[in-house]
Length: 552
Image (cartoon, rainbow, N blue to C red):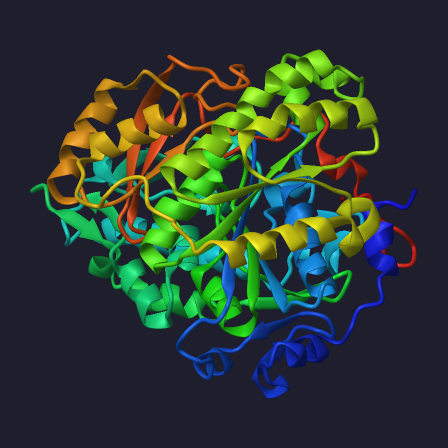
């Protein structure tokens, strides 16, 4: 069996200008990064029609296992299948972060015969967007320290500085850093780039002016007199925008089957808002009839943030949700351990179905969405397990489709594509937000925890209580971005399936004023991950011909 990278390298890629031509984007408006990668220029985007013509489809998932469940693969396979049945479809996904590429998860370009290509370039430096985001973030950090060093005319309270540096790599040694320079010392640290506020701003801004204005509103500290200090006080937003100007233009590539793909931005969903850029999504909606996008990790994280943050800010109206599930994940939530997932265990499968049920309930009842369950097929799934799953799902009153896009490409997801089209044609979107803007911040937190997670209460430590009190005075209208483990509805990764009655423990609240939300750090979540004992980087190399090996 060929590896993902061998399949990708064997693919017959089309010139990127041919991909652009197929969606009506002029070659003259492309900024080429070689023969197979390009950016859609700002000038070209400005020529697009004002009103979107496309239908927006969200792909999300049940709570994953540590190995991942193929959500990106399903997103790509569905797009290929929609084009295969004669529709005009485009995929919009996030750019991979080097943290998981070299860590536990590996790349984020799909797999098998449902990939975006060239996968090596996309998984590694791509067009340099993440480097630009890191540079803009760290420029602001340097300007803060420089201002204090040269006399501190703004009277910045050094102890109140909240702005942290970032790096697109898992490096636990940088979580806590002590700074020492003439006149002051301070404790700070690094976040991974995909958890930074600059990444969130980059993905939520719609124009360069919007980007610049959001950057100017970043709150970095307080003054000695208790007044907020913004990036604009340091005259940082202009230079930060200059660093981001080229990166802000969406990246166009293709799938193995030749479907157009926009890959742009990349916030994590467990510690950030987990969606690709608004500018890419809106461009796709003007260029294609069906736009398939994804939200990271399980629906309790990625989908909730896609709805309550991205759709709220960008006024997007999703039509249908495809909820990805795997037999192995359901067995895991039913009590099976990781080394048992390849074994036929219908007992575990039947118990684990409660995780799927809660996600369906949340998506349908709390957000008003049509839901289609896509069972991502793995080679070790047995026929008895598939039949048992179909029997258990039958009473849930939503379509269920077994998909084999990893092995078969577009033809393996044709049934899913037809079901998506039928659902959109049969019923108009009834999408709704979970909470209103004017609700108190504590009420928003409580609603997420109790309605979606099954928690009995939210518990804030003393620091978080004080932060909530301050934020409620001026920032009450902002949505909440919960940062917690992706492996559970709770903030405890060991509580699998669909736990109830647990406590959502909030240890800190971070204001992301430029992005337009408040981050609630829950449980033991880290904004700078670490590498596992056996990182994926150990398998990656380059052969004598210059081809990368071991990347998946």
